[in-house]
Length: 348
Ligand SMILES: [Zn+2]
Image 1 (cartoon, rainbow, N blue to C red):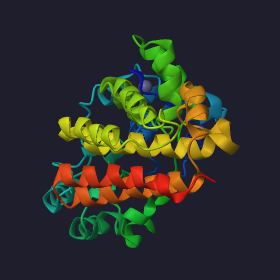
Image 2 (tube, rainbow, N blue to C red):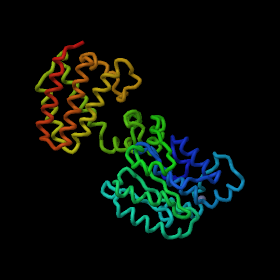
Image 3 (tube, protein in one colour):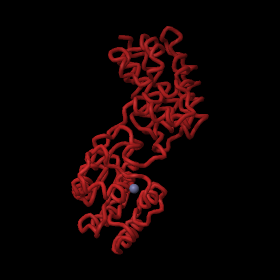
Image 4 (cartoon, helix red, strand yellow):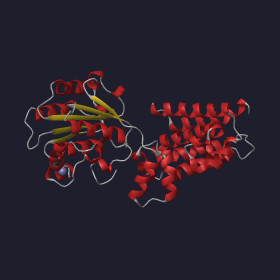
């Protein structure tokens, strides 16, 4: 999220950080921690900050005087801090998916390393990120380290949610939940990163679901300009007093097909837009496309709740079909024809 790596640099995760600081101050560090939460909310960054705080020489001497929680943080300047921040500390071991999977071989290698004593630290830290990508074989192998924790070693696992992991893994870890970031926090991070139009910052902050990673992806992938043309294309269907024009619906299908690798994302944009048309009637504050509130309100007048729900179902059905490798053009044509047909449901 930023170049700094102490607890102080982490935005919007006060509760998890307070817990970790309490463990450090009281000397009650669990041997295994599990951080859960969406991608891009600061789990890995917090794990690094935690590894630094566990090994910082300055903090180690300050802890003799039971400092206030607010001041418990790595100094960022001593040798262990610099090695950890620079990612070359021999006792901070990182395990991450290779080609989307954490393989059994990676866990076996880790277990071998853990049979040796730490090189130069009191607290070796293993940061195993995206633990949900371990298959059950890898997860079962990891259990050995969780059941018989190696000397002077802390394990930090990160994952989206506990239900993605083996219950035996979850039950052996101290679970700490990370929540989505507030839109205000996302705005602060994007503004600090620089080079982004203020209008884009506002829009992306309300669309990213509290994930900074997602916010960056939306900006870097020109997602906003794609969303805008899809909104324009969707709007043209209601120009004829709300009556469907099959020709314009099929034109939408044709445009979507042109960017084959982005179809899934485009369909998610359509679903989000339809969802907002439902929400804008009763709860405009919770509309995701906040910057298009006027367009949404105007468009929502021409379409009923039943019609919108049918259209959302049509998109959802197409998404499922595309994931099973059906013919793309046929699937999208069927989707838009079903969406056009939704107007036949009556306008109440
Ligand atoms: Zn330090």
